[in-house]
Length: 163
Length: 163
DNA sequence: ATTAATGCAAAAACTTTGCAGCAAG
DNA sequence: CTTGCTGCAAAGTTTTTGCATTAAT
Image 1 (cartoon, rainbow over the protein chains, first blue to last red):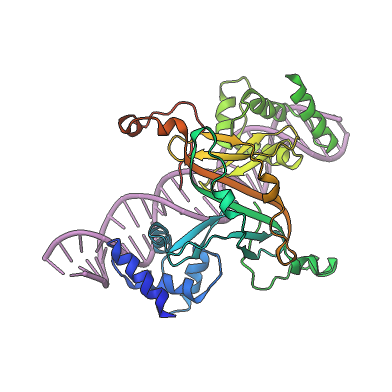
Image 2: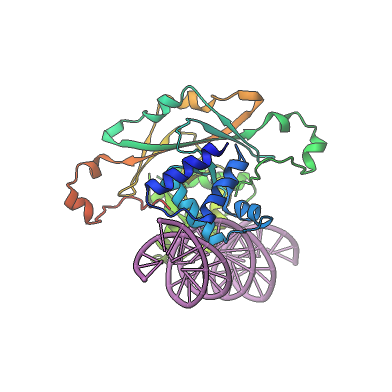
């Protein structure tokens, strides 16, 4: 799947950003973790094992650039940490279901999404963007017994805790 | 409108919280600022002029309690500061339009809100809560000329700036 | 009198910034 | 070789916490 890397490289060059090793590495982290919603810290940790760990400041600065050029999207779930997901520049309309118990993030492509986008033309307010998040309990957590539920064992979901 | 204060006092007592002067003051700040979406810092500032300023730690602790008992609602617009609005315990379905230019927050009661609430029954995920925010430009800002727009004069809207 | 709540200051958590050195073009 | 990028450490913001004092019941 080098096509994503190509796309990323192209977008960066289009916007006159230099193609540095660190920026490629950061893109690779996303490409190697499809469907995940990573925090800056998680990204930094991911690069520690490699031959070229990234400084946290660089991670933040690069995330800001990648968001700017539309390669990644930022999700704020209200828990004090920003998460990012790779989009590759494509607009793929979807929302997020966050499990309050295990922290897993599921994506939904809801047909009603179009309606939401252009709902309130109220009072001449021009809507340019919106954010829709769902919170609740995922099927996996619902199917566990109380006992299992009390042991806070999780399995690979993005971690999450409401503030 | 002492009825709101009565309601607040009742709810706090119901949940076995002590009725302190600070808690009454904090409720009063909300009641005196209807329709506003206040940050902890704004609330603290508001009490400075009075004969009984609140410590910021108390503001945060009290906000947490008031949210717990359902007297206020918390709104996170992704700009790194939590805002709170008084609900008085009533569930009044509405969403927020945030102007990216002047920071004003407008409320909408959108008919489609019910659909949003119970959209994704997907994979057995049980939705218990959701957050829907709209961003854009309010009619007031749209109607200003470029010149006026460049002078960053605002008029009393809740302040806001995307991170 | 008990026990919870306050206020201060310190710490925590996340993110941004200054600056000297490094690397992409 | 020029200008932008990185990394470190320091600073900035918002929120939380420890602890002695104060106030509510």
